[in-house]
Image 1 (spheres, rainbow, N blue to C red):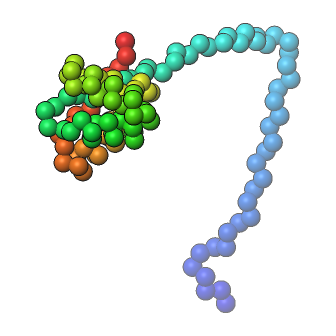
Image 2 (image 1 turned 45 degrees about the horizontal axis):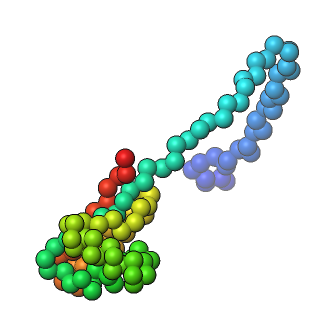
Image 3 (image 1 turned 180 degrees about the horizontal axis):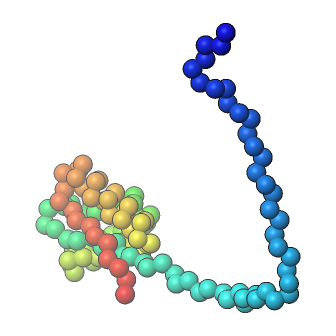
Length: 122
């Protein structure tokens, strides 16, 4: 006696093999055109001046996140202090956004209101 509620599975059937049609010589071949891609849009990371963040902290941030030496960091810090803003570096969009987040996070952890933005370069 067979008490199974369902039928046993049937073996899989083989799919028919289709062969490509023979070329009749009337085929059209397109010429390959080289595509010229534009370089990615670049963004500058700009640090903004405020009256509360210590100059030494700005120098440390420039050295740590933007790989500036002490002299370059001091010059950028003075430009930020005198002009109200200064360019810290030029990067692709994703890297610029990461640098901005790093600076804002470090400033918040240190309790400083330092602001940093990224702007597209025209």
